Image 1: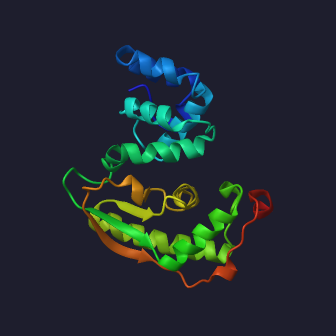
Image 2: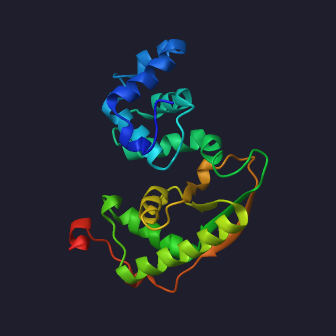
Length: 220
């Protein structure tokens, strides 16, 4: 494998080019039409880094590149492009958490909590700058840790399923506190994949105790 430990950090222009060259050997027209006409190499590198950061394998580079070829029309944001790619490689993402043919055990968010987060994300021009009120964040982390620990002990993996709107933000937010949690959007789960609900993450907070600030102010 080209990549080793900390793969998102090791994904460079040179490594990405090697992966592209492998696909080009079999599908030269795909690469010719895609890079750099439809997507710049730097943007592709960021998309691949985003995938690797959440432990998504790059074994199906052809599908990743084909999806980008279809979805790039005017889109330059690597985060948006990553979100477009992930549903197309849903089976690949699931391979690390469930065996083929097995039922996928999942955690969900309490509907009121998910709506709160969806409102925060939809109101923010830059979701990466959203910060939760500290007490709310602490309760969220504790509850998710508890439910994820139970899932790992009883099922072998902890998977949280949320709406596509909040998936990138909640995944990044929770990754700091719950290292082995896999966060999926429901659109990333193949239609024929059986799922079983384990628990709903619930916290005793309300809308008024969440706020959106920038990370700089929050860190202060």
